[in-house]
Amino acid sequence: QVQLVESGGGLVQPGGSLRLSCAGSGFTLDDYTIGWIRQAPGKEREGVAYISRTDGSTHYADSVKGRITISRDNAKNTVYLRMNNLKTEDTAVYHCAADRWLFSEAQMAYPAPPNEYDYWGQGTQVTVSS
Image (cartoon, rainbow, N blue to C red):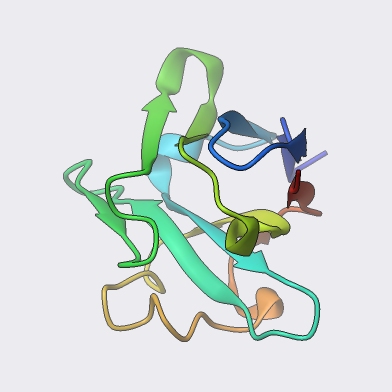
């Protein structure tokens, strides 16, 4: 089955850390740019970070720079999102997506609808609360 599966979400206190995983099955993640997109209740989707398929460059939303790191492990066909110093405003469902063309710095603030990506995961809940 061709799919993306996220894991690693949970409840964490402000200032805490989490590592989210995005595992690909049925296709090779390295052939795609992989991004993380989050959606909080009552808010629009927001691009968080992406890692380019062409040169491996990483890109981050201003709201998470310095706190979040995206990385690949091609041997495991998995992309990770390491999140440190979490804030209550980071609470959201985090989805990973795979696409060859959609990700860009300009698109970060206004990500495409889920059905426009080549692959879209079901999401993992991150809740930051004391």
